[in-house]
Amino acid sequence: MSLLQQLTLFQYKEPSEGYWGPVTATIDWCEENYVVSPFFAEIVNATTNLSFYFLSLNLLRSAIKNDHGLMFVFVSIGMCVVGIGSWLFHMTLKYEFQLLDELPMIYVTAIPFAYIFGLETNSKFKRYLVYVTTGTLIAGLTYIYCSVYKNPELHQASYAVLNISIVVKSVSLVKKHVTDYNQRHFLYKFVGFALFEFLFGFLVWNLDTVYCSDLIRVRRLVGLPLGALLFEGHGWWHILTSLGIFHFILYNQMLNVWYRGLQDKYELVWRLGMPFEVRLKPQPAPVAKKEKSSK
Image 1 (cartoon, rainbow, N blue to C red):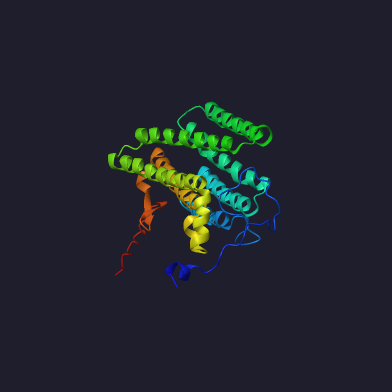
Image 2: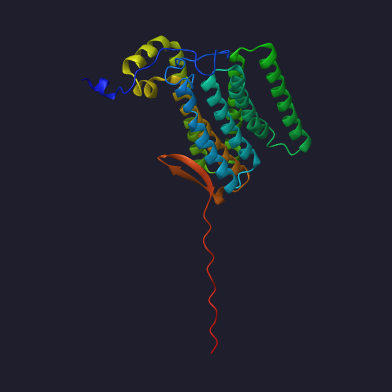
């Protein structure tokens, strides 16, 4: 028996119509439908969203505990909602859950977009004008995407424009507000690392699309579980994207700390060789005063 045969515990079933019925989504991915479980149209693409849950819950806990502000609380919750929507979409391939996957991606990105572009203005009116304009544009985009032009490329292009705008604006803020040379260049490298995770995941996803028929043959040759673990490119896109978003949020927390002038009160914590949390530095315990002994 070959090593490959020893590692193959199960074989793929033939694609079929599962528990959730016919596909109604406007897009279907390379993972074959219902070949592992009758309850999951795309089990790998669904379950890899667990990375969104774990990372977003850590961000939410940290944002509350370390006083990063409401914006980061909302972004953390939004990231979790994106993971839930994506799980439901890939589990069912239903159009309503496709929207629950795609639209929260736009909404959760629009929050830091409005925040960062209204950050430096001293006028409350101008700041609220940025918020209202962003909300109006997002509402218009939602209407067009749901009712007029349902091509997923519109969603993908809009999501890209929002993210590129945030990155460009945040880098200009780093240059202006992070006065320490070493910290400034570390943040440039940090945002570059987050972008690398995101773009590498995007590359893997596109290779999965371009070479889909070849990858299906490889998966069936390798069998389960290795075929699913190693050769489902869209699943790896979920994992790498969640890491990229996670680290991009940490980068923005560090930028926000510098903008607020609180850089001496915070520290970046590392886990498994990667940035994990921007937290308040532990405060030294107060030294108890010795009482003078009476004679």
